[in-house]
Length: 366
Image (cartoon, rainbow, N blue to C red; front, side, top):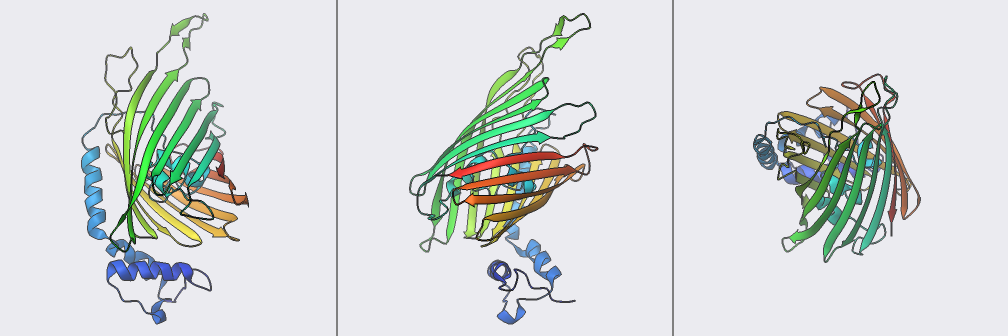
């Protein structure tokens, strides 16, 4: 089998990956072995990366989501900004931005100033999206998101996020989140770190009245507003390898219409995430457990020209390939404090025969 080096001519990414494997898999890797086969290099970590911890977290996720088996439809969308969308939505472990609050409330503690990681920073993010463009019934589905976070390493972080989902003039959802997060060093050497966070979110949905052939209102179903609780953690056994657990809708609120006699609870959702963060690239993977469904999200980002340009890609397997989506995107930083992102999702399974979903984000640090 031919040898394929990773990370370009300098091999920085490859050396970082090898260092992680050597440390956590107990595999001595010398400089002479750094260009061993590509297949071995990528497959081996899946068998030896903290296997016991991963299996333990998976069992927790399966057990927790198994507590609630009722069906649901509202607030199923987990998309956030264009960067996360372009990376397949795999943002639970690697989300270090204000809009990461929706995926994992612990993420805002990792918000950093572009020039000084020990300095307090603020971030404002705005996203606009059009989903499933070109539906046969010409329905326009849109999303808007606005988030803000303030992080001070010694005190912690606070964030607020608003998100709106609209399906034409027929149905709408609104999210309003407020979250807190803080990071703690573990051990005297401070090489390990854990970030803990929690968020309270107000969920609201509403529908347009049904109009009969005579122009009169046949039914006007009232919506509902409910509070939900999220918690999350990100554990870094080393600086470049985050492992995350996010639990959403801990209180499983009843989201049925106020006129409904049937209870429809929003189920608990558990997400396990892992990432590898190198100097010029980031890789992430999420496993989402929700009732009897399991979603897989994988994404990668490569940065160029002193982080002024980023290319991203990924895929999403919804309910283990019932719905398969490919994602692509890019980011451009015209100034140190401003980044413009674009994310594209193309459905291969599930909803098809559309021009995909398009998302634009503006991220400003100050």
